[in-house]
Length: 126
Image (cartoon, rainbow, N blue to C red):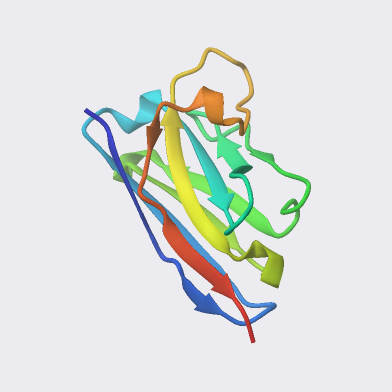
């Protein structure tokens, strides 16, 4: 019913920038909260950021706050994660996810999200 496809990952040097995109199809994008998660080899998947249906209530993990910006363009059915000041510890597979919630503010916990993309690799290395 709902499909999410991430793109924009790649290899970047420390201090560099990348913008990840999450294209959503199969349902009306406006109804869904969008979250970004990441998983590094040998580590558990962790929440990075999320954005409410109208884009007014983004949340960020402390590890990325001030460096990453989440946004959405409902007209294009696409969400974004703009990443600046990338660090080697940001290296991971990044996933976008969609969920339906009645919360006033989104949370970046896995249980809130029922639909997941396949992930895109981000590698930060010199």
